[in-house]
Length: 475
Image (cartoon, rainbow, N blue to C red):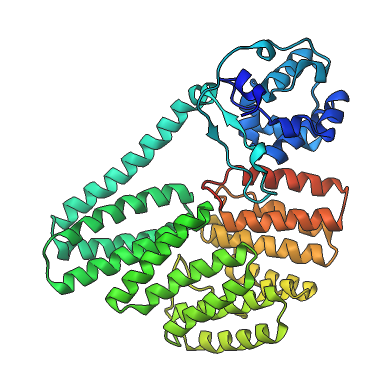
């Protein structure tokens, strides 16, 4: 532990010595350039706007955002002192007297590590931030309130399950089926951490029934329901950015699929793993998984078609235009086989449009930006009409469609249109890891193609604020 961190036991945030002694930080402090100081703390430690605001005190997250964007400055001596004390910057570096904590003899206390911004460069080990007792005191009431709400919500679901099933395995299967339909429809509109907690509670309750004696048919039905709950948990964990947990749940779903002889369940679990690889920038693994999923699912089924469209965009990410086109044609043929009443909303659904899903993404990845703009606008007009958005349908997929539009517009050289699409995408209240990943890609593309543009900095600040709200431990 840095000596300074030990001296500052009980302070929420202490920037590491590696950052404090960097030339960039020394210059920023000498010039009292608080925009750059805040930028360095935010980027190098991964501290969210909320954590930085709490550390400084008497400051809001929006004020931190304004400072980072250069909209507001810091001039008053009292505020400058709070910044020095909040981040652990010695007084002399900011032209202040020696701070009280600089001569403190406090011993170090246990710490909690704050995870870095999931979409920015991962900090080195020496850049990890310490959080002490003040953070626990400041946040414990709110944290306990949230935890209590989540526990109560889970308990209410279990109470309803107990009443409706009467402890009967046969009744439980029917009730679980209704719950799975409910969560499949709402999982993309509820904050992922909340739906994850509820699903976990239900999944644990259902698992307990397998310890009791029951006919093989009932055991198979409950096992299948547990598999679908695991599949939904994998999706929720993915949206949280908890990739290891997602892989575990998907693996369980695949095992339940094999036990019950239900290959479609396995297909959906494999699709989630393929999506994780895709958004992590590992297209070859994503492509392999999409192909694997198609091999175990039947042609003409919804999941088989979804896996075909996933193969298309994974192939596009590898730059293989021929395989992309082959996969697109195959996906189009599979879509034509789907029944007219196929599900078009929820976790286990497909968006039916003129083109197969992910066509616009594939065009953008292949550098066909103008075509991607046209294709994305067509998707937005046909699938995400204003009335659907007003009802709260497809919030995550709508946000990602807007970000694909932003990436395509940026690639085509249209700055204002790209930034506008990015802002619209991040205006929702459900940050999910795939969305934040695309938002980060757009931010970096804008910085590369339109350096020093004010619109780019404003969008970047919104992206970083959204990323700081992401729940989960990104691995």
